[in-house]
Image 1 (cartoon, one colour):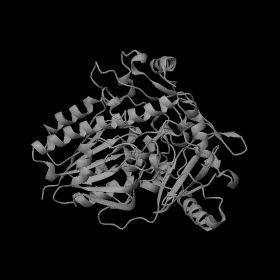
Image 2: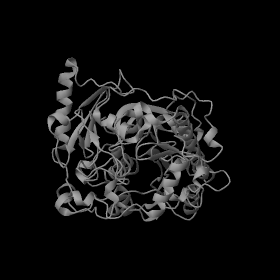
Image 3: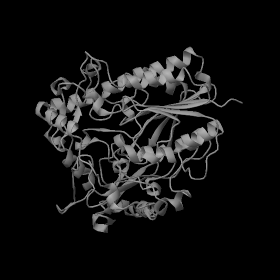
Length: 502
C-alpha cells in the first residue's frame, strides 16, 4: 500500500483564538481555508507546547523529547557555542545527537523537505531538502524607510510589537508558499513537507489592506491588572514595559496580529488548491499547528515565554479525508511532542524508543503534560538576543532569568521556578502559581496560597519535581553569545525607536 503524503503547515507565535474554528470573543476570525481543514478533520481543543519559546519547542516536536532530555531550554541553543555532547545526551538518546522524526521518515522511504523557518540547533536540521527563504526578519527591513512600517514599540527592551508592511512591494514571506508549490511539482511521493511560516511572529507586519481587516473588532485598548499573577509573569510584563503603551497602540497591535493570520490563511488556501487540483487530498495527511502561541497585552504580557493559556496553548488540526473523522473536536489533553507518534501511527513508519508522546488516535490521553523554558543561569535573560531583562523576586531582589517548569492536568496548571542563578531554586523563590483552568479560563488567579488548594499544590509540585529531577544541564558558557548583534540590525532598531507609535 502506498504511504500517504504529509503536508505539515507550521506557524510561529500563533494563538488558537486567531482561527475561526477555535473562536474569538472580540471578532469573527477570517480564516476560511484553515477552518476548512478542521471541517474535514479533527481539531484538538487542548493542545499545549512543550516550551513556550521557538527553539526549545521546535526541538521537542522534532525529537519527541522534553527540554529536560535535550538541554534545549531557550533560543540560546542555536548559537555557535551550543552543541550536543555524549557526556550530556548519551544516556537519554543512546547517541550524542537525538534523531528527528523527519530523519526516520526519510530512512523509511519519504522524501522530506522544509520551506521557511527552521530555528533549531544545527545538529537537528535534518531535512533532505531545506529552503529558508522568506524566514528571516531582516527580509522585511531590506531597503525600507522605518517610518513606512508605522512601528509599535514597547518601551522595555525595546520590543517592536507591530506595524504595517508597505503595500507597494511584494511581501517577503510569499516565497515560502511559492517555493513549496514549485518543489511539489517535481517530487514523487511519498513526501513529508513542512511549510514553516515565520508569521505571525513579533514584530507583526501584515501587508495592507489586511492591517485594517479587523478595524471594527471589539478588542480591548487597556492592559488589565496583573497583580494576582506570579512574580515571574509580573517581571516579564515589567521587562517589556507594556503599561507604557497608549490605548491606540494596544488596539492596533491586536488587529495587526489577526490581520497577519489572515495572510497565513490565504497561503493555506493556495496549498489546499494545489492538492485539490491534483486529486491529492485523499492521499495527504494535513497537519496545521504552531510552535507556541502569543500574548497580545493580557495583564501586560506580549509575545510568548509564559504558561498563560494564550501563549502555552497551540492550535492542532489534523485531516486525512476518507480516513480520519470529519469535523470532530476533541477536548482531551495533548502536547506538541505527540506529533511524531501520531504520524507514525497513521503512516506505519516505525519510530525508535527515543520518541515519547502518544498517538492521538490510538493511545489514551495523558494525565499530565509538561513544559519548560529557560536555562536559569545568572547570565540568562528573557530576551537573550538583546541581553535584556532580570527576574525580580517578591523582595525586590534582581536575579538572572529563571528556568520555569509547568505541569498541566485536564483541570489545573501549576508552574514554578526550578533553577535560578545556576542552581536549584530555594523554596522561597519557587514562586508557585496554581490556576484552575475550568473555573478561570484566562488563568489569571493564583490559588497557590489558598488553604483549600494546599493538597493540590503539594501533589502537582511533587509531580513537577520528579519530572525535572534528572534534567540535562549544559555549561553556562554554551549559552553565551560569542558575537554582538549585527550592526545593520542594531541600526535599524534604533531608527524604529525614533519613529515608533508607543
